[in-house]
Each structure stands twice: as structure tokens, then as C-alpha cells.
Image 1 (cartoon, rainbow, N blue to C red):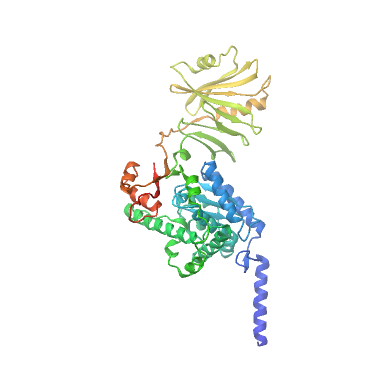
Image 2 (tube, rainbow, N blue to C red):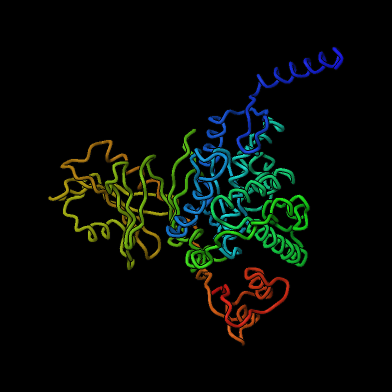
Length: 494
């Protein structure tokens, strides 16, 4: 080789290494190739944790302890045989009907409730989780970040919940990846590593191929619905239009001699998701919700608790918690001790101060004072209870209803600090627009079809609307046409 060639290569390596010093050069644990990235593993984990905390602030997670435990168990099983088994992987179910899953750097894996409903067995669930784990093991986020230095991450929540990378400033790295994927090459790479992890975890690698087929059918269904309603179609990662089942690289990755070897655990999967909410979850949007942010006092954002159906909200101190009981709401301090209880009573036209005295059986009301709170009137004061010492009480009227608030300090005398904490909660009380009682959630179940079972009839019985039969076909693998076979176990929506 001529000296000039060596010199050229040496110069190129010098420049390359100089650039790497500005960023970081490491061997990718999944690909085995050198990565030029702007983040160490510790930095990668930190970025994922920061983005995860923002997601927890605004993204509802599905509250089903058994299903969450099941998804975590499958996810950990696949992660344990991945190329980065030592990461602290965490798995979450997002309470959204959107068909989506995504991963954050450092091992945070999310799958939407809506996507789980379209799967047929545990192996397919493992395939989705394996694909997302592969994005983490192959460091796709930080590799892409190096190519798009300075990408924003704050818009991920809006992008995830709407399924649109165009919402707000959803041009950030993780938001774009969650909705639009990492591009065809990285998505195929994730499929390949995911299939490898499936095999190692005892699942058939072909489950990855099956999942892509399900998602491709869903994308076609979404596009048809979108054209009919004039909206934009939403699909998992949005890459399946360029990620077809016929892709030769994908076929080579998946269709190996042992592609069908492994357990699918269909019965366990059906047991786990039976009764899962399908579509919008009314319980995630109605009832009572903690809410951080909104109103501000100076530069400090306050924590507010909103009870949507009863129509009120109040602020509570940082570090405290709110628990809804059957007949009251308890606000507890950082030690878990109930300090303020809030109830609801009726009032037949009596003035609020005598009502308060009568309800609490008051003999002596210290520091008696009226309250005027955003259009609501009330009254407050301090009483002496023989067993509990001094307590701050209040009553706030709203039509023929009265909200009652009472402290639970077990002290002979309220200190100024204790009384201020209670009064801050009382005076932060606000009326809110009430939400109408929502329709009961629709849930997913399994039944055995007979010779008379038809998707049109099932859709009509469940009141699924004009496209209900197609929806049942797609979640049962019959889209765009077909009827259940007698004796077959199928999904229905009730």
C-alpha cells in the first residue's frame, strides 16, 4: 500500500478519534461494532430516567396488578437473555387504546393496553417486548442522538398519547422514535435481535413475523377508517408501510429452521388479559385524579387534587398524599398520618355557620371566621375535642351540598404550623366543572364459537358501531373477511 494511502488513513483515524474524544467511542453490546455516541451508559440511563419521570407525571398507567405483573415477568424473561442483561429493565402498561409500544434509553419499556388486545399469545407479547428491548440493547436512541445532537425530549408525552409526532414540539428524539420509529434499518435490526432473544427465552422466533402481520393488518384497517373520517391514520411506530411482511431481510432474519420451535403459552396469555379494558378507559379520565401543576403561586407550582364527578379541587402540601375512601377523602402527611378529612353532606337551606355548629356538635368555636372561596361561601373555626385535642374544622356550601373539612392532629393544642397547613388546604378549595357519569368500560373476554357465531352479531350485541365487525375480525386475526370456526376460542368485547 502506498505511503500516501497510509497517511490518508492515519489522518482519517486521527480526525475520527478526535471527534470521538468530543463524544464517546464504545463497542455496541448488541452489534459488536464501534459506536460514536454523545452519552456514556450512565448518561444513557440518566436520560431515560429523566424522560420516564416526565412520562409518569402526565401519562396514565393501566392499574391492573395481575396484568402488570404478567407483562413484567415476560419482559424480564426476555431481557435476561438479551445482549445487555445487567440493565435495570422496567416494564409498564400505558393506559391508552392506541396501538403502540416504545422504549427509553436505560431499559424503560412501555406497551399500550390497546396493543396487547391485538395479540394472540404470550410469544407475540414477548416479541413486542423483545423488539423494544432490542432498541435499548442496540443503543438506537443514543446512536440516533449522536446524529441529531441537541434533540428535544420534553414532547414525548403528547406524541405518545395522541400517536402523532406533529403535536406541539414533538420533533424530539424520543417522541419521534415512539411514534415514527428509528427508521427502517434500525427497526429491522430490532426485529433481528428481538427474534434472537425470543429463541433464547424459549419462544418461537416466528412470533416476531406474526406480530408484524397483525400490525400490518391494523395499519390497513386504520387507513380505511381514517379515509372515511378524513383524519390521519395512526399505527405502531408508523413504519410498517415501509416495513412489509415480504421484506427479504426480514424473511432471512425470521425464517430459520427453528423459527417455529418454542412455546406460545396461549392459555396463560388469555387468562392474563381476560377482562382487560378495551377502548377508552372511563376510570382513567373520570372520578378523582391527583394533578400536579396548573395553578401557580409565585414561581412555585402547586399540587392539586381534582374530584371530577363531585366537582371540586384543592391543593395539598408537597410530600403529602391523597386517598379516596368510600365516604371521605383523607389527606395524609409524609408520615402517612391522616391530617385532613373531606366529606360531603346535604343542607336543606340552613345558613352555613349554624349548619357547621350543628353538624360538628360545636359548643365553643374558637377563631370563628367566614370563608369566601371562588364563589363559594363557608365557615371555619377551631374546636376542642377531649380525645383528640384541638381540631380545625370547616364547611363550604354549594347549593344544597356542603363540603366538610376537619383536621386530625392528635395534639392538645394546634401549633401555628399545623393550623397553617390545614388552612392552606381549606382556602385552596375550588369548585370545578362536574363531569357526567361515563358509560361503563368495555372489556375483552374469550368465548368458544359455535356454528351460529358471526362477527356482525357479536358487534351488534356489544354496540360497537358501524365498524364493529371489522374490529372483531382484526383482533381475532380474520381481517378483512371471514367468520369464526366452530369450536374456536375467540375474543369478544362486552
